[in-house]
Image (cartoon, rainbow, N blue to C red; front, side, top):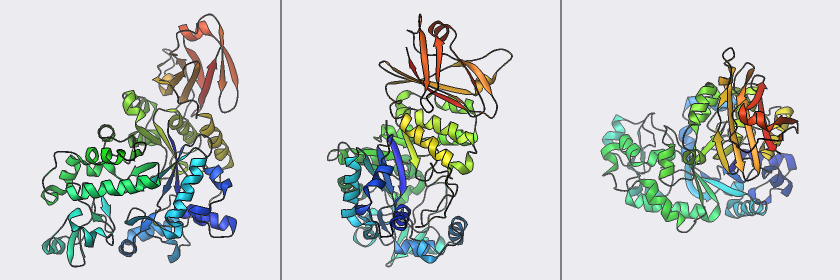
Length: 483
């Protein structure tokens, strides 16, 4: 199972430069730092934001008072040098020289590969910066407008070199002011997207595709209508992905996806898609809601990315207080599919940094939380193998707290693992109905993977009645079972 660790590359390198008292680029990150990043339990490192950022996009962004206010909210001592521009306003898919350029990235990839870890990079299929070469060299790749469009809707269109283009957008929100919309229905654009991804595949082992659902035929048609031209017979991703995989068959594709389109994008060729629905349920809802979500087919679940935070979401420590974060972390770490961890999450950082910034505020690390995550990420690496099953919990007429229990198992040959979580703010008791039919006639030892605590239970009771559990609010069992 895939475990991704996201790093804000610009901020990370700046902090490493301060730590080592010299300029650190991707090509000369000390080996001990790569050891910290490529910890046991992490098999993919996402270096977010390595491509050339757009000065033109930055100038546009700085005219947005709400955006600049968000910079000051996150970094009260902000200075102009802290504002680097958006990594999702890409001027060119070339590694920024300030980060070490292509040679530096190749060095970083080699360091990760030596530790058995893949490198993941971003691809932004929906839009480009207003100073991207395509605006002058290949205007056919973009959604065009007219002078009348610009006069009537200056927030939705912009003039670049005397040509009017549509600003990038999704169908539910106003246009993003700093980017220009690509035309997913253009045959030329689709061919260019293949070439771009082939070039990324030469430099990385995995690609995270930003807002991937915006390029789907039905979504794009809803957003742009006649401006995009005729709807192609083939959807965007089924056209693009096989052509890229023909040269890079092992390239892993991860889709940022919303609006319950995860399964559709899996069917169009993505290995994994964001599971935003699970995130919302863990943060805002209860155990019953989470359990209902986990009733989806296993094939779909194996293609999801479980997370508690990323650069687009609030920090987990800010929205999941106390023990609730740990309970939620045990859940995302032990479910089928991929897991996404975010640099700073393990330290309990609470301030979400706008991606425009190259510096973040100092925050005191939560040593207890760091220890918890360190043990969890390592412990679950061998757990998520084999057959996964969502388990039933039962209770008694005078005690319905078993409804607050979440439980599932993993079975791989003789290896058996059990996860039980009380996802509520009060104690819960119940019996977990185990999936194993060969427990009769002997005792079994249950061992906690994080603390080594052991429990001995009778196999007949486990089979006939289930495992009795009593858990305090937001507590859990992460157990191996051996006879």
